[in-house]
Length: 180
Image (cartoon, rainbow, N blue to C red; front, side, top):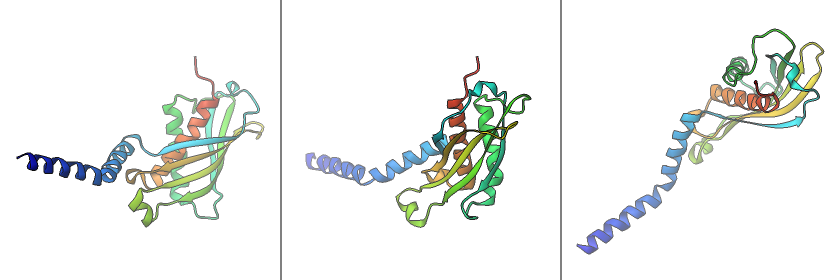
């Protein structure tokens, strides 16, 4: 009886150890489904002015700067995703007054390959984003913003656009003064 229990315990421990990678991936996929694609940024030029003077934020042109390799669908979806993120963070959109324009270009786009599927997918889109004073055309600040997917649930153009929008708005939120 003791041998049978011991064999059962060893078998369960062995199964746990062997399935750890699969279990870990399952947890990661579940978390990814709940949180969506990720967005990050790295500021390359600090704001030249106090952003409190801007009463409105608009999305301008975001173009393909990656030799035609950026999917047109991403460029079409991105402005809407940015506006959704701006609104969710309660940043001013659609208002009148002094306006800050988000513009830029996609400088890198990666789609997960077959090898990536086996070890965990990795997709990303990298952009150089500028905040521009609408009246003068002056560049106020610049950052590299990234939309990243590390789960199967968040693969595809729409999810990368969502992640990129999150990165852009995280950056703006960091710079923009909180509303009283």
